[in-house]
Amino acid sequence: MAVDLGAGSVRRLLIGTIRNIFNDAERGETPVVRSDDALYPPDSVIWRVHGDVTSMMVGGVSALLLQMLHPSALAGVWDHSTFREDMLGRLRRTARFIAVTTYGERALAEAAIAKVRAVHEHVKGNLPDGTPYTATDPHLLAWVHVTEAVSFLDAWIRYGEPRMSAADQDRYFLEFAAIARALDADPVPETRAEAEALIARYRPELVADDRTRAVADKVLHQPYPSLVMAPAQALVMRAAVDLLPGWAREMHRLGQVRAAVPLVRGATAGIAGTMRWAFGGGVK
Image (cartoon, rainbow, N blue to C red):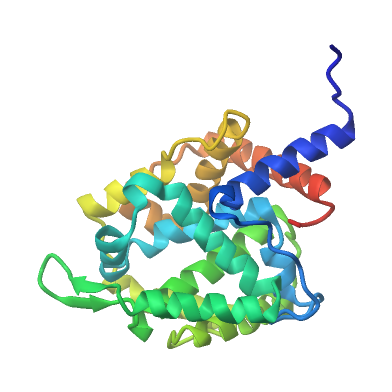
């Protein structure tokens, strides 16, 4: 039997693979449909940034690696998450929340925000030193938000829009701020300068220990969702580490071979371009 390797078949294979990764069929999930009645209009910068599958995967993993450097964020994952058995599920839920709140129907976006707020009410406990933490803490929510915003945007700039204007970058932070405030984060940056200053303010609070590295190892070495995606996933993980600020890589003890950086970036850019070709510019 002849195998159809035409462009249409390749597109269908790529689209099907990505949809299977980001949507849990066993739970009845279907791809998020872009709506004209979303929280943001179709011409918003946040649609442009969050609609790119490869840069969002790279940025999402990089954001997780940053977030877990905060002891309270790490404790919430360690004490209340199923990351040990289902890291893919955690990443999938985060990706779906971002998609729904960016370009999904407004009612679905508002319901997703309300659900996350309700979940946060139950995520609380004590750090190993006895310090209490809660996921409803505006200060902690601000750290989670700013790390996501910077990571998503920087991944998009590197792999999607290298010449993105400073004005559009600030616009992205301003737009994304609405979701952060809906989740009660405070303070919330509205420009790149404010975001970078906020991350600098958090740095004295950050810690890397055995638990941090255990979670990072789970993130970076999770099982491949399919053999087809194995090479791409391995590359995305290396690209995510490469995207981290140097100080964060050092805290995680994630070495970087300088000679490999151009190869990682070039190959990731190639995957990003292929995915945009398959999806016609974005995830649908």
